[in-house]
Image 1 (tube, rainbow, N blue to C red):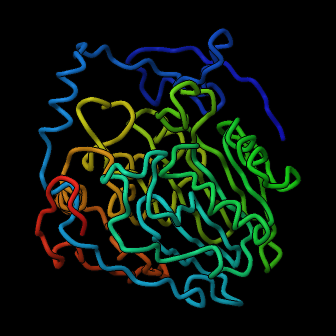
Image 2 (spheres, rainbow, N blue to C red):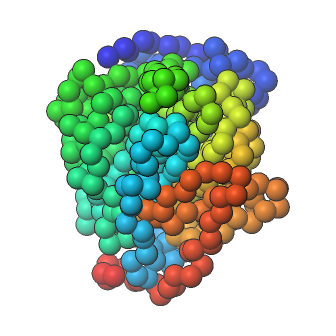
Length: 370
């Protein structure tokens, strides 16, 4: 695995035009052994533990749906059609996506579990659907799995181990690939990259598909002692006919315009648009910021992700979709909102529904089960 060390200078209030992709690199604190976004965050007022507790618990009572949300069981013949050089996108929920682009089968942050926490008794981290719309055993072969970072809602250990014999290659940010190897994924299948590095694959037609690791503004870690010891990232997938962007988890920043400059324009930008909170404005975007990020990278279609399957903040479960829809309409942005498990064949006429408006709104209180 390739593990280069990179250093960048932190600057407060930096704009996209102040940087180039060559200079916008993650900051490595070699003393603490942690990674940092190269643009320093604006100072925020300090809050006590109880102030944070009240802010967390004063959110919407509708953060969890009152009943299991409907989903579509993935039809793998539609998600991965044979002898097809087009672009087919399947939302598995939250940030998990199955993708076939120019004949290459890709999974991004595949999470098939129903709970995304080391402490599964926490209700909010349970999947809104009764089960995942896709399982590893449903798949015969995958060309590449892309990981954005090591948080539980993006890196499902059981799913990745089950996918290992079915997958030719795993690409991950620095340090995340090492976790895969520690878990038992063959090291020969794993490659680590830092921002702006690329891997490539041949399509069935013999053309080249580029898989580029791109910047994000987030954090990492799976325990109380390993925060930011691994890197986080997004992915730009660039073929001869189609281009796709997946943001991973990220706050807003100048990196979006740089990604658009280096790898755009894109057919689809899948941009995290949920789990935002005033307590962590640098780690996750509001829907309004997500629409701006979509415009920055330059994409035909905007698809909000990081919602619809788990509650990791205090807003209502369907609020991100409503706010994204309103903002996209006001700014003339074409938005895709597939149902969980639905496959879209991307074209100029691709259309989706506002499905979240048609489900029940009964609220589940406390620890009651659905």
